[in-house]
Amino acid sequence: MLRLVKCELTKLKRKKFVMFVILGAFLFPFLFTMLALKGSLGNVRVFDKLFVGIIGYGQIWMLPLVLGIVATMLFFMERDHDTLKNLRTIPISTLRIVTSKLIVLFIFGFIFSTASAGSSIIGGLLLGGINDVLYKFEVGTITGLLLTAGTLPIVIAIVFFNRSYIISIIIVLFYDVFNFALILGGFQSRIPIIKLLYGIFPSPIINRWHWNVFVSPSLYYYSELAPFMLPLSQVVITIAIMAILSYIAIIQIYRKREV
Image 1: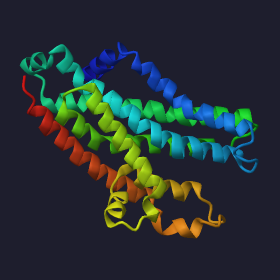
Image 2: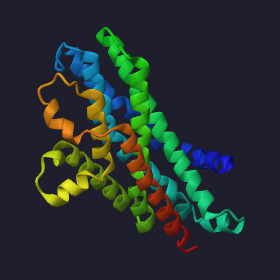
Image 3: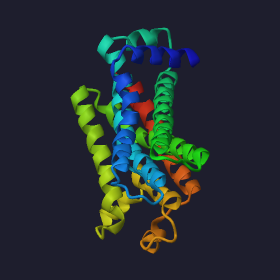
C-alpha cells in the first residue's frame, strides 16, 4: 500500500497544480491578515477574529474545492494514460487502488489544514500577538480532516461520470458553493428540504461544531445559535458514516469501469 501511495504522489508531482494547492492554503490567510492590518477586523481579540476568518470561512470554502480538483486528477490519470488495464493485470485490486488515492487525498487535506493554521499564526505575529496556539492548530487540523472526509461524496460523482475534467470541476464547484450557501443561511431557513440538507451536508455540520469553538456565550447572538450547535463527537460520527458509505460506493463504481 505504501508503494501505491508513493506512486500516486509521484504522478501528482508532475502536475503543476500541486504548487497551487500549497499556495491556496496561504491565500485566505494573506487576505484576512491584510484586512486586519488595515483595521477592518476591529481591535478586540483581532487574532481570534483572524483565525475564525481563515479556518471558519477560508478553509471551509477552499479545501473542498481544492480536494475535488485533486481527486479529479487522481481518478482520471489511469484513464488519460490508459494504464488501468496494466494495473488490473499485475494484478492490483480495486480496493488497494482506491484506498491509495484516498490516502493521498487525506495527505493533501492535512497539508492544507496545517498550512492554513500555521499561516494564521504568522498573521497573528504580524498583528502583534497570538494565543492558544496549540489549540488553534488542533482545531485547524481536525477541521481539515473532517472536510476531507466530507469531500468523499463528491468523489462518487467524479468516479461515476468519468468523462471530462470540466464536468467534474463544475460538479465540485457546485457542491462547494451549495455547502457554503447552507452555512450562510441554512439554519434560518423554514423550507423543509433546506433544513434537511443543512443537517446532512458536511460543511454545515462542521460549521455547527465551529460555533462551539468560536462563539462566546457573552455574545448577543449566542442564544440564537446555541440550539444548532453540535459537539465534536457527533460531527465525527456523522461524517465518518458518510465517508465509509462513500468509500464503499467509490470502490463499487471504480470496479465496474471498462478496461
